[in-house]
Image 1 (cartoon, rainbow, N blue to C red):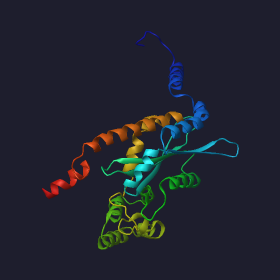
Image 2 (image 1 turned 90 degrees about the vertical axis):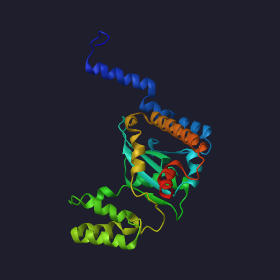
Image 3 (image 1 turned 180 degrees about the vertical axis):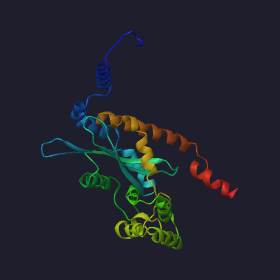
Image 4 (image 1 turned 60 degrees about the vertical axis):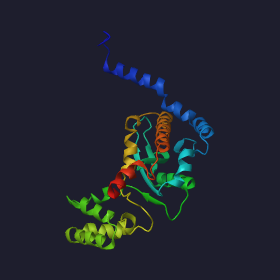
Length: 277
């Protein structure tokens, strides 16, 4: 209307779609150049690992991407990795998987990305197998995934507060007290947590390794939120956005790190310094 032209909604939609194709490419073009795209990523980003899985008819099935800089830096991170998936909205749908750690400043540290057909056991097994080749598997390593929604199937309005109290408890007596409270108020929930989920998988006190203070999926969810407006992009265009964001994050953090003169990172300094001054 501003240009003095009247067109139908459908024609405007087609024009918008055509403009997006000119800028980002089509989904079909994305599949066609994916091998070449991964080859150039590996060539220009030393240490980068890419994988593509196809079916028996050589059609795309899964992809995996871990940038070399993220792989090299993981040795300095806490060995706690959050994994999650978010649905894609493009023509061929799919699910974007991500594995992320947390750096010393409490910021997300993306380790690996994947695109699969859905969040099923086969797809997750494939993705975690690739991830294991990248970061290894040691007794120190802890994986965190979103199990809390399974608790919500019980119709208890205030169960989550008690649940998180058991998750975050450091001491044995604290954990036992919170579990006793759940047992008295919600015996079915207590039975489910003990027999089906298991204390070692969800309790910081019982976990055999080190989870530190990382007990939620916040670091993964915040990472997914940065891509909310790109979930309908063709796969290669989406990976381009991921690469651009990660490059900016690494550069910004490098600048901050070079300016640090205190013994701790800025977030830790702001938390601990007031306690001792």
